[in-house]
Image 1 (cartoon, helix red, strand yellow):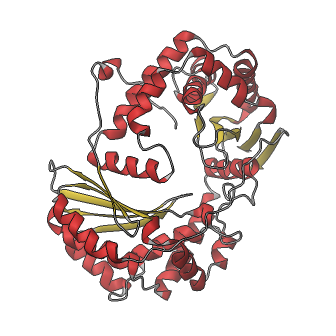
Image 2: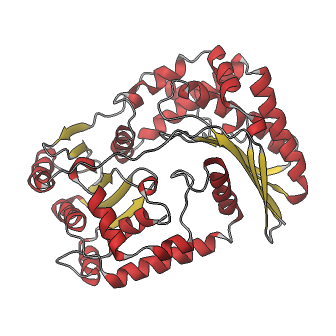
Length: 429
């Protein structure tokens, strides 16, 4: 949750409430989130499925994304891939698939007048996939080539290496696709993964734009409502302990700069310390101009082109990380400064009241921009609900940020910043 800009405090001058999303659950467990907005004659829908790369078996890393791509590109029982492409072009409907760690999204968008065609094709690709062999081969080849090209991007290399060091390469949160793992995937793996996880009680359809709520609700009930639910065992995501050993990995590349990634295990999702930690993280490195790392490393010392910190959560243990792009001869100085600021905050817990005030203003101002379109509103709510956040999480976020005390932020610094346990990756000449 990285904050990149500090917006004017005037945006918070009066209370503001996001538009209300209409929420329905069908008897088979299928969920429907609707938000009407007729400002533009367009419509977008995302079908969320509770599965992703964290659900993959070891040695099949990348499978979830290949399944999502093949659903969107591989044709249906009634349409070959070429026929599907032509049909989508004729209707001006965009269709895509993408798998994250815990959620997969099949996204469709079109002009409002094509609303029924949009839902029809979404239903068709999800419930009657063709698994075309030629498209399967195409997606496998394209995915492999994309992974090969990642080796030319030092920041991606560093980020992948850090994730492996923090989580371990066999942990679901540390495993990542490789050319080798993609090459192991077979059509039977695709079909098996689909049959295991693509069930209505694991699905949520979020819709925003110009449409008739009664018509869409009726259509969804008459189609997705007929799907048969199936229970699937929950994955065994074991809690990830903080590794007590500090470690540095160096990757030599023909580059003119140094790319530094440093981090360690952070918060589990649902931690009561989330709000204090998010403010702490902002103060440390959440803003390139006013955070401690930004001011010292970038502005005052001129040692970095880019410097910021970030954090993520998951059910097993999230990751806190710091990212720096610097001159190759400044690597040592940058790492010393990172250590200095982490130790200062972790040991002395010297966060000030003024820093906390600025951080609160920044996060609260950014909060409004989570809802600057109806699409963001409904898709954000769907995502947070599926990941297990409280139903009123977004509504109560400003209140929970405002009530964080200085003592709580200082305690979070001592509890969650561990400079002696830092994993560091440096990609440099």
